[in-house]
Image (cartoon, rainbow, N blue to C red; front, side, top):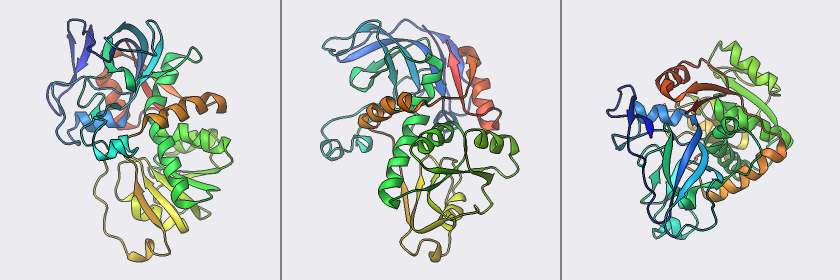
Length: 331
């Protein structure tokens, strides 16, 4: 197999050749056909997440076909197309796992962070955390659904639980996750307000093309109060702005795995029962729900393809905001 490997935090990924891995009990080997490039991959490469394993193969939006089954694997077949997300393994015995919160497992493994991921031609996955994808849809177009789509879906559900009815939803940071969630939310009757970096007319126009009723800079006030705001951009300074934009009893959901420090803000922004909550990882149930719903709603991903060997360029372009939607590596 070949892979792009992070050997040292902050260094470019390196192209390497390795022996083909063998699946252990309960595992599957996947021949990868596409892997999305996520902002979390940038956080891993830049050392913004604590204690990454190195060397590590990044990538956690994996689509491919099973080409070898480990001992004891049931319910999956050779040649079946599957997707592998960020959450790659849980302990099943900690209090969080035992109470239905596997996304908060005390001893988890994360794909592309603590176990090798999808910037490669092959990978090994825990069979319990591989989602059957069926045969509809192109591999590259499905890849962003495995994280950008799933974390957006979980953030959307958390927003609904905390804000109640959500006619108006604000999305701060209109990248891979927001461009997917915008389609889901609109299909379910919500109005989308898109917030981008100040002056990013290109992305604002992209949001309008996807049906946003308003698009502007994150430093602008929306023309109407929001019922909920979801922050995908890793910028802590957006939290007070989002709180100011939501109505009484509205909710602000921080959907990223990493965010710069949140500045102090006056209590009046939180008062009147506004809620500030975070989203951590995902559960397999989130995946089952969303991967069933997305094709029913006709969700389409906007993707920019890169050869696997150009993973460093894809990461650089993601950091620079050089494309709309999501980047996908093709082995």
